[in-house]
Length: 199
Image (tube, rainbow, N blue to C red; front, side, top):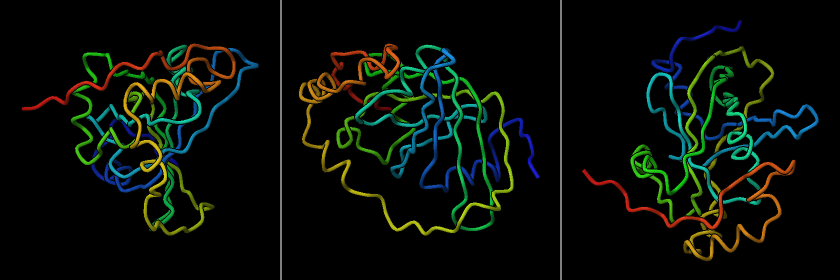
């Protein structure tokens, strides 16, 4: 049966951090707007920042619906499913923000992802989510599926781009700067990747 949690720690945090994929759901305020559901993966691209805050790396893609919806209204739900081990589903309902490359917080946020080279994936932003409601459910109907490895295709595609060519790639796509429903998406031209923060 479902349970509500006040914070992301202990067993709950361990479960989230062990998963190889999670899903994000967002929507515009317009009731006729397009609801977006996206899979997110890539080892090391998700982090629990503190007991109420999580973050993930927003890599290059062919659209920017999540970014557009967060810019408009901030609503987001993240979901993890146990495809191995005991059945479980965890959802974090909260408020999200896309922190872009030219934001002074961006270099510090990258420190939460020490195992990811952002240059390999065309990093656009860090999505930061403040949890308002954290719940789990049984997950009895979720099938067993085995994780083999991350696909190398994304990194092999975007590692050859520099900041300028990546910005040109985004400018050619229909739904990067503007969402499917006409909302502002990724600000372009893409700012240069800032230098990492060193201690």
